Image 1: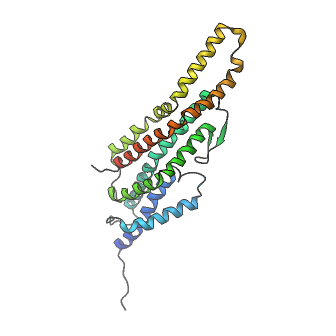
Image 2 (image 1 turned 60 degrees about the horizontal axis):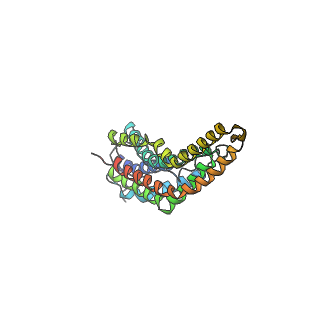
Image 3 (image 1 turned 90 degrees about the vertical axis):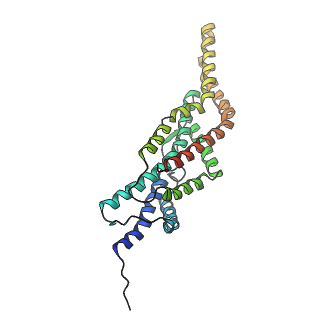
Length: 261
């Protein structure tokens, strides 16, 4: 009976197909929205990454023949981490826009004192910002955004095969330039609240100047909070279209940064 003999290249191919795939998927799950939430146990993330690796590994293109314990193999692993994290970061940026928008809205309307612990990031955020995150997360799941995200991750293994080739520099600059509009999008979301509160504060100033004995600032705080709730309810229907627009831009950007010139 002849003994089975495996070469170093064959062992490297088998290990690389699963280990490098697992590392890339873990990097994406550690950064991407919903998957990276503190409320999702680490065991669930690891199990999901392992299950996805088992599905993806047999479909990979030919892998580079390198020693699995060499420096070249380590660089390949770093490349996979960068690619996976870049995919997740683009969509995390979209959710971050609404957190900042909620912070701005809360500060304008006197609701900034109401803070709570965010299950998404594990940090203190305003209630308005958390409300925005809950709404956008539910809509993200209802539109199967998590499935589109996993699909793009799987396609990236063929668009940028596992190896020393990483995301091109010009594509990384595309992602950075898109992120430079972070605060612009946040301000655009709460622009109706900014305009409304500017008019309210201007009215209080006119009243205080015309009739100081009325002392409008004594009741201004309560009126500002009440108007904040009204403005929140009025502007809520426009939240989903803007979120849809940003998600479309995000998915388009992910496809663009995965293109090798």
